[in-house]
Image 1 (cartoon, helix red, strand yellow):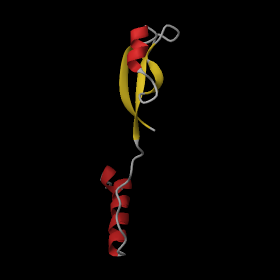
Image 2 (cartoon, rainbow, N blue to C red):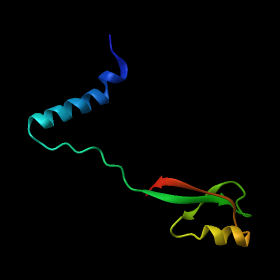
Image 3 (cartoon, one colour):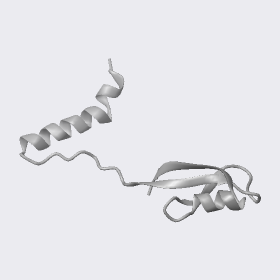
Length: 79
């Protein structure tokens, strides 16, 4: 009887790592791409939350102070 997740991709990946170790190959963990901080908020033209720009490219304080955007939040997103 199958044991679910244990016999799927995880088991295959573990076996591949074990085989690589036996061959003397270095094991590197999977690398995630770098995350970037995204600014979300609402505007008059688009009153529901939406992407406004990247935090290092958009001045959130100026957007809010000018009244052009509100309800601002910053979220991490893959770049």
